Image (cartoon, rainbow, N blue to C red):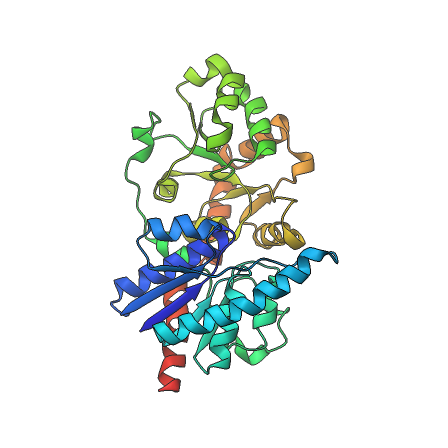
Length: 367
């Protein structure tokens, strides 16, 4: 197939798209692909680094309050429709897929008006504005969380696929990467991570907890985020020399190390949750309170309700609560096993293949 795909703004919109492309390549189903994003979004660096053909559209999101910026947004959206139409005419896709973020709105909308098969993928429990808008026009709406399905009125278009990122990690095996970091491979490992940029509240709690963590029978891998590493290192001081603690700014191969992780503590973005359920990793989730519609809290609640994760709200997060929550899982083998099995039951290890089947059916029906 010739695939045009668009999504951007956050890694949660980009990585599922890349996982889908990867799986199509593995199955030898992809003739050509074109990724459409913005020049200043995360997708510009992530997608080009992956070696995927990339084109840009100039567009911006609406402000939630009535401002002059919104008039500029409308002007840019109109121009983006013309740009999208030109890209589609030139590339001639068999199908167009949107994975979220405002950049995909003009691309998927124009494709639907040109009678090209279209799919959107909603990774979160609370549907984004772009996907809600596009839901009226696309052929299929793929989703992950049951809560998201209730937010679209076009019920016949809905299909539960899971997040393609889950399939990308589901079959990963331990590679001894912990040993390469100076940690042991025979100890349970707690991973604390707030993303490539880090999360200051999470880092602050982890720093306060390190004196206690240094005395535990399990070990800690603490990923601070690149910009915050030096500050954390200075605060921790001599405890960085403890053999059961490793502090790093970031790991570009973070997903590869997940099969060696016993418990993950971090935010509850869509990609993280797809990965931990695919691998059956119990998690301690600290939803970011700063995201749109508080969707991370809704994401986390779904895993907590299924007993695959424990919720630790940011307002309750400190060194003491972090240690207590980690101990609750890591020092109780029965609790760990129950959460491990619950996470696996939630997994969709064939998510990318499910989405691909939806795409193939639409293309076949068109032909």
